[in-house]
Length: 356
Image 1 (cartoon, rainbow, N blue to C red):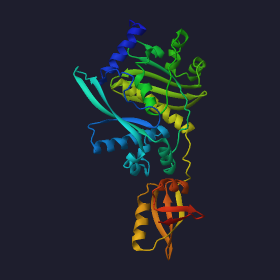
Image 2: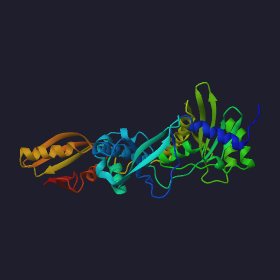
Image 3: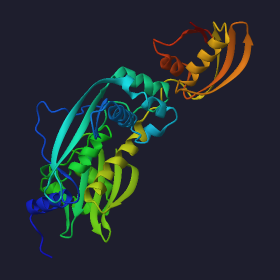
């Protein structure tokens, strides 16, 4: 089979990926709004109405929690749903952006995007209160050694072909970290065979000029249903994870490499929430002078996403002692009270709060 040149191969593969779905026109840098960093996210919207915007705030906060924790299912963890419905209170600022693209048929398309910036300290407090894990910063930038065989033999995807690697690189950014590509010199091009054999030691030697000593190996090829990619993630010579992605869309198959690497990194370097372990904690409340006060206290506690269950233990005069089942420790409970809470205090063991 005749082998096509490297430039022609990259152009053909990039065109193939672009033809499988909606193609966005190149963005112009400058004043265009865009999400940057862990505490910002952008989500598509259908309008600029309040209801649509509040729903988008919730989706954006879910994305941010996923980036900070490294867990893409963070939005489904206990207690998170209630805070997503209150996402507006965590927003620092937001902007709308209009994107113009071209459909596969050549017709112009338009899409509205909401770019949301959340207050870092408020999000950090939420993460701690709900006991969500945290993927610490700074985060490593592993090197991707990806060989692709489109039918003309495997080729290394290097820095010169970063446009073809964009689905993989962008997904890593969406997950809160970055991936790098090798320069693609002659010696590195010769590593394709080792990648195809999944010879992690040989690839690690070729990657020794780069830092950190982390490699994401991938071999991507066609099958009857579309595309398949076999992945291996290596950290300091140790294989942390292996997985396979399959999809009719080449871009989706490629992007799954970044997902698997993020999950491997989170398992290796993620830290548990700092607000204490989930469990039952004894808490005392004072200032309960009437049935209305009791209802107000009950409503306050039930409205806190960190509280899973309330069990009264003892009542005496204006004092009520309860057992609270919390998603995190008592420090997480205190964080969720906020400055406008009707509960004050929290000193002592067990802690005593006064209902004002």
